[in-house]
Structure formats: C-alpha cells, structure tokens
Length: 347
Image 1: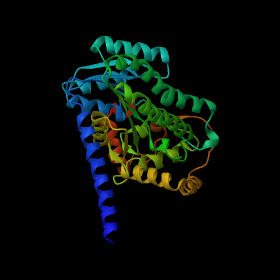
Image 2: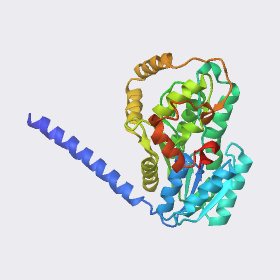
Image 3: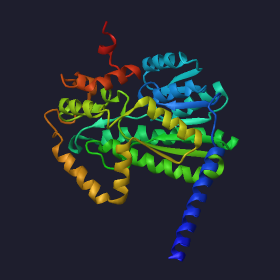
Image 4: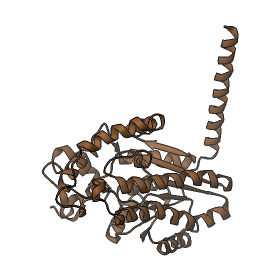
C-alpha cells in the first residue's frame, strides 16, 4: 500500500512539474500586441473583422485583405474608429501572384509582419451529389492553397528575423466529417494537416504556428454562405442552428480567445464546447462519431430541383430565416459587416 502511494505521489509530482514547465514556457513566449503588425486574410467581415477589431483595441497595426473592395473600405473605417492604423488591400488568396504582391505591400508599408492570421474562407452547403469538381477546387484554392501561399510569402522575412506567429483558422469540419460540407471539410482537413505540420517544422526557426479549430460562431456568415440543392430549406435550418445561444459562440469572445492563443504561441485551440466534445469523441471513437453523423445526414434535405446551382444565403431567405429565431445572427451580421445590400438600404 505504501509503495502504491509513493508511486502515485511520484506520478503526481511529475505531472505537476510538466504542467509548471509548460506554464513557464508559455509565459516567456507571450507577446504584447501594442505596436505589433498583424495581417488578417478575409479581414473585411465576420470572424476576420472581429479579430482585426480585437487587435486594434490592443494597439496593433492592422493589415487586412479580401476580394470585395467595398467591404474592405467599410471594415477599414470600423477598425480606424478603434484608433488603429489599418492598411486594406484587395486580394484573392487563391492567386499566388496577388498574394506575393499583397505581402510585399504590407512589408513595405509597415516594415515587417509579426503575426499572420489565415482566415479567408468560403462555405458551401449542400449534399454530396450536388457538389462539383469546381466546388472542391474553389474550396481548396481558398482554404488550402490560400493558406500555403500567404505562409510561403511571409516566411522569408520571419526566418530572417527568427521570429513570427502564424495563426491558421481551420474548422471542426477539418477534424470530423460534418455532413453537407464535403468540399469545405476536405479543404479544412488539408489546412489542418498543413498547419500542424508547419508547427513542427518552423518552431526551431522561431516561428510559432497556431491551429485554431472553431465550431459554430455567431458572425453572420450564414448570410453569405453558398447553398446548393434545396437551398431555401438548408438556409432556414442553418440560419437557426448557426445562431443558437447554447451551441454557438459570440464572435467577439471567439476572437479574443484566438488572439490570446496567438500571443502565447499556443499550438492548438478548439473553440466552443460542442466542437471540443465532437473533436474528442472522434479521437476516441471515430467509427461511432461517423456513424452518428451519418444518421444526421439521413434527415437532412435531399438535392431538390435546383441541382448544383449555387445560391447565396441571403438570396434564399424565408420567413423563418428572417424571424426572431435568428435575431442574434442578424445582430452579428450588422456588427461584422455581413449584411447584404437589401438590408443595408433599409431606412
């Protein structure tokens, strides 16, 4: 009995020493964000904008890029109102040449990039039978190649300084097979593997890579996602589920957690309790998890009459999607620059 207690004590002491050592290392690599240069792709709306605003409040100098110049201008104005300097550059991260030029412009303007946050993405919702090769290519171009292009472009300057932080926003869809998101899931799985591999390869060079795995967040992104198949049914369902208070996380809270993980150089961050539970369950019992998700897929709407035609979310609105059931999502869309033109023009 005494020897057993001794063994337990030794194990406990060892665990405590390991935990304490990790805390010391985490503290030593913590950055203050005041004056740091942060580049956020997909920074004109949604989570990207929420992170830019969070960094602005902490005194960072901000660069954002996105494809839509109007959204970029509006986002830049919002960031400037927080008292931050901001550089807004139109850029499609799926275009390697455009990415290289964008990175060069940011470095010319600020002199360096301290933190790169790869956030740009596109959400495509619908059953597998209506997804095309072009859908898969587009998702891979933006959410895998777009991450790689920016990383390769920024790495030479980070390596030269032996310092840098790269944060890759993946998804719970990059850990488990979320139904009706197959092109998105595929790209996010690839991005997750890339991000985790980069962490291992780059740490010795002073560049710390953080992989962020969010679950559902209230960013208003459901309004600008792409829907295929029975788009109106899908949009009605997703607009409610993407904004449930106990299942989804407020975008500002998520942004604060991500920026804290970047400050500390953490390897991994999973956001929201449902994403944490699902990720752990899949790690322990992947067969069971996929079986449960297959049952979920069975009750989702079929392809419908529209086939593989794409519909932007707000083009598929219904009385349900515009009801009080989605009030939190509507508020988030207004806060994070996601509102469509018809809503912006209301008196």
